[in-house]
Length: 263
Length: 279
Image (cartoon, rainbow over all chains, first blue to last red):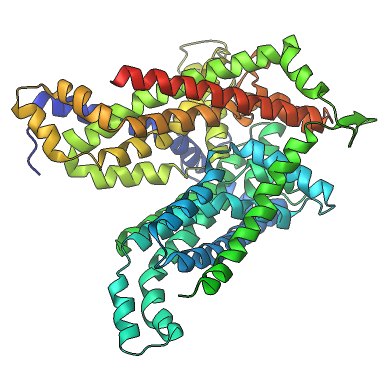
């Protein structure tokens, strides 16, 4: 692209700005990852040497393993549930009038404007009132609500590119609605559905506030990390943090790659 | 497709929304009018919780501090994000996909992990202090960083920058390239083009960046709890306290809804001001 806007010195300045902001963004994450491999129980420079001792300690800690399993369960179930609900809305909106789609979009995005603290305490009251109790299942129920708007954004972006002429052609050629769905609609929107599902998994893995108010004793990994921070800083927390980071950013990366591939 | 099929397809998600989103929020509103008798919320409707939220000096202090911190964080996030998106989109477009991708992924870079990291970086036994001590620059740990409003603001800005960059960057994708070039062909400088063409056309994105940061900060409680001092706690900490040790859910609900009203009113005001300023 022609770029008449930048002289050499502005470009250097611009590059320095980008790098500075990115460095600030990633600095805390780098610190956690770096010290998770530190061979001595000290979180300071100079770096003494690499070791996997904190991972060894953490992965032999049954409490950490339990929390990891719960987070994984929550991620998978949140992904599946919000994927299915999102897919069913997406299908309902294929061929719907623009007005209907816009209205659904607005309704689906409303939860995004609510701070999660507000929703979390509402959900906690609700579970208490109806005697549902606090558990991992209760948390998953809330995670689906948190994930659905994002699932919906990804799916409706895919719908905007949907070529309805293909569907019409199929019907003209005598295809049943089921056949048209299986052979045309599904393959076309499947990458987006998978991308959205993985995104929901990333959101669930990272989610803290709703889990804090609804998980009860069934602590997920972020809740365990929080509880241990309150007990005092300990180098093994770096390993827990790194595992959590790899899971969330890995899933987010996977989702972005999938969605990018489709478009 | 027949409407009945469509209704059937909409039904599961709609029911889910009603059951696990609308009803919880409704319950929150209802609970805010409940009374408390021997630590149990009872359905005796009263306005006392709101009266307390609005008139107590203690809560007023928390509200004012929360709004001040939220305003500071939202302003800093927007002021860092706009130039970032601008540079990415107009000055250095060659790498824009890679950098955009990095920002997108860092959005999911661990909410609680970041708070932990800042505690680690700024704490008494944190990276900064240990390194300074190790190098002999100071002989006692510097306690200035942790447990301060500065720590809370730095951590929140750090967490929210991706939420600021993404809407502004998205808005820039819709600015016609021709308009920017035309402004320059007519002799405008780069800054004039940015100020007069790009900024007004991306004002919605800037407003979104500001609003998201403001709303997120207004309900924040983990960051001030782990990084702020006792004098830096926000209204979110009070709300969380009512649902934890304080055992006064109705008051917590009223505090939360009062905050929502304040945030909506202030954002409306800010929106009006920004629109005027951009015109």
